[in-house]
View (cartoon, rainbow, N blue to C red):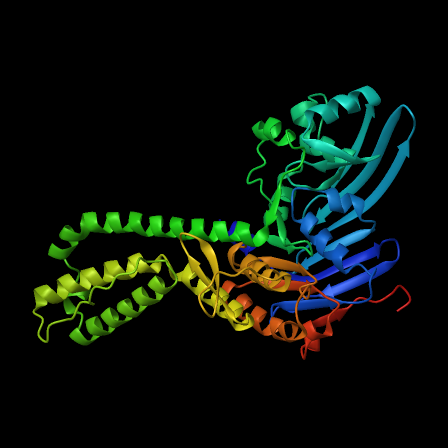
Length: 452
């Protein structure tokens, strides 16, 4: 158990890649104290490729690791351990068949290397059968698109992902347990430049193949719409969680009232009044963000004199109320920060969040309003960081400046710092914008050419 806990607390100290695109050697030390690192450099130097490689390394898909040319990708953690891969590849093709051989060697401190050797040979007949059976659509001579995830795949990727379902004779080499654990040790989320549209498919379970193949490609909807529906569901779940806890506490309330603890019997009137005041303030703030229903009833007022029995009973009630509202703490903090950041940005309109509608945007005169692309980019970015990742994650953001006014770009890092502090996140940004960097060049790492 202790070993698992240690793995979960790993943070990346440095990222290095050699011979990226056959020419670039980059080393990126992360700012562990400030939790924000910014990489910048000319187009074509590999900013986006580095983000995608990191994401692929810590996921179960090797697609990007195969497709992007490099010799070695290395991750050094803050506990002085490392995780790295090397790659060699060879491709050949004839009229009759298509063969690919690629060896990716996975290494980690204290582990035996694992060689992932991928080789397949499919006749034209077998390939045609495979395409009809698997949930993929051909988009190029040797590329396919996954109907569930919209990813572009090579034939090798398709075989690895779906071969065991539709081609029983295809044997996919399994990763060793240590590699599976290593790839899960750090939650990673990549926020790519194409972030305003999202697949409407909510699941990628194999039984849904027939349904998906009717359209061949999943429908795309605005990400803001999808997130709006999602946060409404999250609020409902949190309310249900509080209700379940309330039922449990209510069942045991009589027994606890008649058998109060020493602490409950000895609590002072002053402390009880203080806790009741805090409870009322908390209820009002939770009502304001739709985590509690509106209630216009007057708050309970303590008598000037409380005997020991009343004091003990009220103490039990206050403890129960505090526990019920505690359920909302994390979500309330995140909703509060998100609305604060967004409403500071928006001019002549305001965002609120309700459990019935999710995001609601109104003008100063109360009329419903839609968002510009820049406003959508801001909302999507900050929502993803607050609600789509676990504490301790590494967030990879590609070009956060997209569609943003210069003033918004200059404010971006300050708001990002609030988010990293609240959610305990590390962030690696790739940007072309000096306005995003603003006055924090101490957070930057410049990617340089092969002769520097």
